[in-house]
Length: 377
Image 1 (cartoon, rainbow, N blue to C red):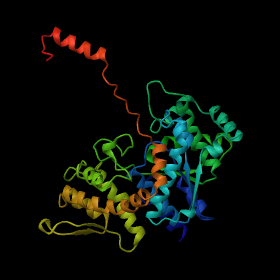
Image 2 (cartoon, one colour):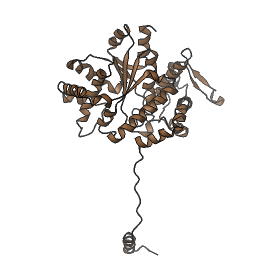
Image 3 (cartoon, rainbow, N blue to C red):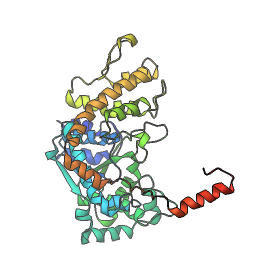
Image 4 (tube, helix red, strand yellow):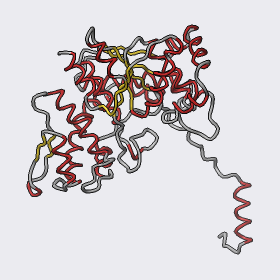
């Protein structure tokens, strides 16, 4: 591939790119080095398919890709994951992500997985945090983390350190660019501004689209069970969620099902067969028979003009998503060690034991009923 072809693939389907000239300059000399970080908090859901598919495209473009398991970030984000669970959740994320990538045909031997705590607790990194604190104001740090760090009435200092660390990770992972969701933009801008102030170079930043949830009004999120589909949801649960997803006729904005088509199904189809990308809907004959789209634009236009009904779109999304999820689900459900890991990473909430009624409790209830003239016979 030429540098221009690599750049086209690297930036395909991204919502925004900052400092693209850095990428162009690097590609004239060598392949790009970049990283994607994920904080192991709630269980990954199908919204993660969007960045994971981009990782495949980066590899196709010859990039050196590092996946950062940001375990300390998970702890710093208002303690979304307590330290005693972070280690297990980091392993859970890594095993799940590897399984998803393998199922999509990704050569994971070309991916480098790094745990943040493996270098973020060193004396040199700590000194660089102090240096960042000495050039970055509270307002800078708070504004940078506003769309990423959980916002509470009385914020912790950890929420200010979070974006400073994410900026420093670019230097310590020795990359040319960082990749993340568009919600990371303010942190990326902070990195571009403040890394040069402590003697480190500016990097490029690549931002992917965030998948809308299945319910109206927000992104697909681990904290909203109705908005997401988990990788390990049973087929019946996936079907129920797709069938109940918000999908108003002709409405294309903030449509989570159309987003899956654009950012997941068509890219996956292109990865499997670049010359014949398509999205098939096995519609019953009485409703017009099967239909195949060879571009997302044609699918979107038909839906906008109401030539394609929400029911037909849901049918196609369900079949295509099940095709992706089946091998992932089968591989992990057959692995007893993964089930054990899941219980350690996401232990079920403790159940309150029901105490048997004491003699005193029974007597007090009986007295109350007598007082109320209720028969105790």
